[in-house]
Amino acid sequence: MSFLDQLAELRARATAALAESVHDLPSLQAWERQFLGGRGELTALLRGIGSVPAEERPEAGREANALKRELTAHYEAREAELATADLAQRLESDAVDVTLPGRRSPLGTVHPVWKMIDEVSQIFALMGFETVFGPEVEIGRYNFDLLNIPSDHPARDVWDTIIVESDREEIVLRTHTSPMQARIMEQREPPVRVIVPGRTYRYEAQDASHEWMFTQIEGLAVDENIKMTDLKGVLQEMARQLFGPNRRIRFRCDFFPFVEPGVDFAVDCAICDGKGCRVCKQTGWLEMGGAGMVHPRVLQGVGYDPERYTGFAFGLGVERLVMMKYGVNDLRAFAGNDLRFLRQFAAATI
Ligand SMILES: [Zn+2]
Image (cartoon, rainbow, N blue to C red):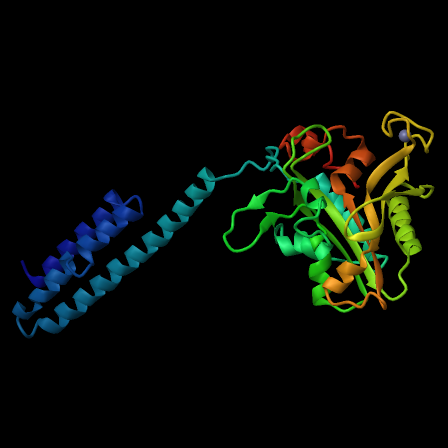
């Protein structure tokens, strides 16, 4: 068979094979390998062109190249066709029925304790207080010593402290947010106005009003001429913002080693307007926390001159604020991981 006849035969077979056996991209690839590729039949035929008589060789070369272009054009056209079909098929099989209702992703919400912290932080921000955070694992020096609680002081026994084992120094889970008083004062010169929200820990048996982990907000203001009336005004403003414009604040003497004088403070019950009800246990008052004027020894301990500067400090139980505002009757609910409890606060703007 002459070279030209072999080309004609190859053209006929390749064209027929394209029509009969190529129906998708893989079979098109196989076709390309068989006829056009580096090891394909056309390439093999071209290698034999040297044996064609010299006078016929130019035409044989032209014809062979023409066939190569022709088959390449067939290949590209078919490939484009199949790619479009393939895309159409994938679009069809992957089709999303947009008329189906969507699946709602479960959305988390801010924990009621942290909602309350945000609210209280905003109230104090308007009175010039910055919100700062401190370590939950604390050195005894900050948790006790710098707060006028020496190692032999009876108050050190009042809190059953969770101790972190350490060879070098006393390390505890902080029993209150007060250590940040000393840390902040060590870092700054007066005026100081901060609130410190955060978790605190005490080794306590749990019941409806006691938890081994709870949340406090510490407040501290130190400057020249700070008086007890400033403390009362600030706490009263907070109570009115949280519980309504008619709320009143009550101070009663109390003892905390790091304040002198010390008080516990209560707000009159918003539910019965101070007349006495179940929530306030018929007293008309709801206890909110402890407060007082910063003890001169605490000021001295951080290098402040107690002759020049005075200050007040207070500590609030955050869970207690939420309990008062929403009538929650069990402290354990806050860390109890019961979503039915937490979801009730999802829509609440505290
Ligand atoms: Zn009441």
